[in-house]
Length: 115
Image (cartoon, rainbow, N blue to C red; front, side):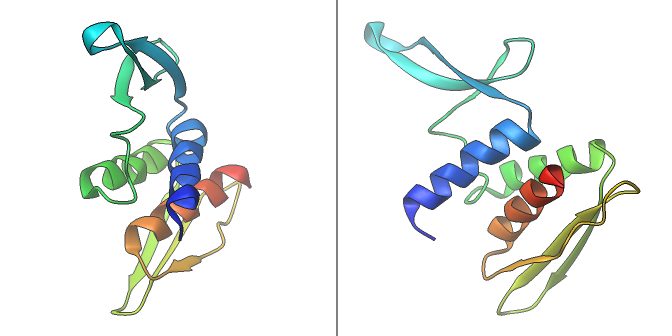
């Protein structure tokens, strides 16, 4: 997965799964930076620091969010790949497999939200 694809996935997870939106906020030395905000306009994390494809805690925050939205999660891990699916009564999620378990969680979360 290219860095551009990873950035696109991070943004899609922030918007669709976490229900955040990006706004610029004042930053050091009169600069601006983009931060992800909740619907209440609370800044959560800078766009640059949001890396659930690399950070286990952020990845688990995504998984926790999916559970809070009423999804069940199934995960199958092997040395070669992770297979993840999110499902709930109104939607059976299709399993998503990837060589990286964090990316599998993110791709499966986005797929489940879209269905």
